[in-house]
Image (cartoon, rainbow, N blue to C red; front, side, top):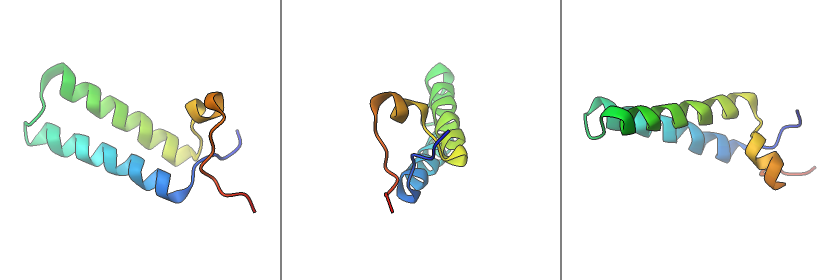
Length: 67
């Protein structure tokens, strides 16, 4: 696995999860939709921790700067 995420991309992914959690626990979203947002946010968090996004690889995208 070659790293393909830059720091700004990782920060946005973490913020998406935090936003989904806030919406769910403030009961703005609920039920299946709220849980789906948390699952999607969790996947984004996992990819940011691994520093690798499989979808980016398939699409040939990399936000990592080349040295």
